[in-house]
Image 1: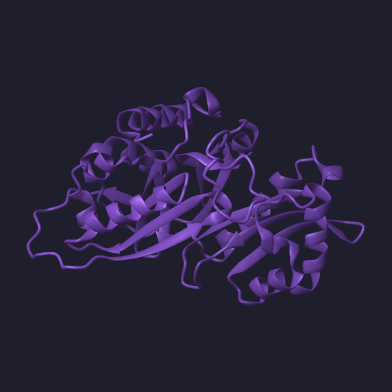
Image 2: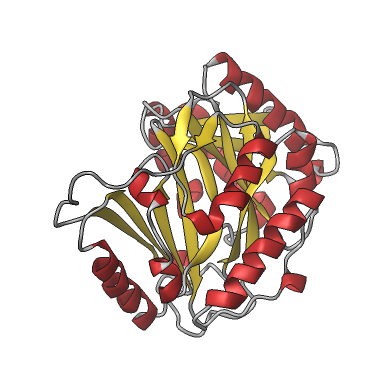
Length: 327
């Protein structure tokens, strides 16, 4: 897709979703065009009679990324039922392989199994489940403390398009088995490695980033570098996010850092539980995502899966939630 076609994409999304689509920039052709021009976003589209009637996006955080995230999967209501999504994503996978990207990361709704089945048919594999990820309404602009009910979960998927680089994976021992299953099932190049005893003291201050996504009532804490104050800083941030009504709080930990393998349940004591792993989310390693629900109740029966492997992941995540969920 070219930047000059941005208006046609906005029109396609409006025909399909009205004003309800949960990403605002898709309604602004100038913002779409800017993303395409910056080479951090690529679009595969389906065309009929000169109009865009289908779209799958591929987003990068930086030009050095080895993996991108597929999103904004839209098919015009007039063209649904003709496997247009499958055709577009197959083309995206082929393009990614030619461009030497390791793979495509994506999210699929767990409100029903059909989107998950479409990913599985493309040889994508589940790497986690985020419970209650999508709010019942995403049209509000500010965090609403009453919006915790009826949230929809998502399944995380990874489609490998090239072999990744060999790398160590340091995971907390409590999640060793499930991470090992994900690595083997997805054909990843990471190797589970036991962290050796620390030979030098940690720095005093951890380095982390914080993102608050108000349209989804979510907060994300990303740990870049461990420090002695990490546990206390995360606890303070967690209390702040819960007090302002964030329903889902995520903690991303670098799996290429031995410190992640030395964690012994401190975050679970706060209410975090396993969410999944993001293969090659970083150029030099993978990410472990922990999740925490605040005033959100999710039962296994609310979450659909499309494979036995996905069902096993869900069972593990639900058991972790039931053990550590803070309510």
